[in-house]
Image: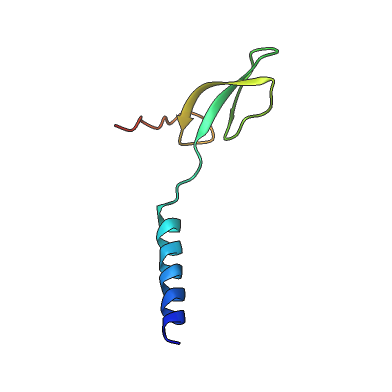
Length: 69
């Protein structure tokens, strides 16, 4: 019966490790296909929008995230 608590503790530690490595979602500049307006947003705004640039660290789309090497 001691293996059940050990498995629970192991699962809890695994979840905590994954949560510690999590990062916030990146921001992107999106361009409207209708009028070319640019908006900074984390997720696509719909079929009328295309990704213009990014990723960025902030909600103003000013701090670029460098590419991974």
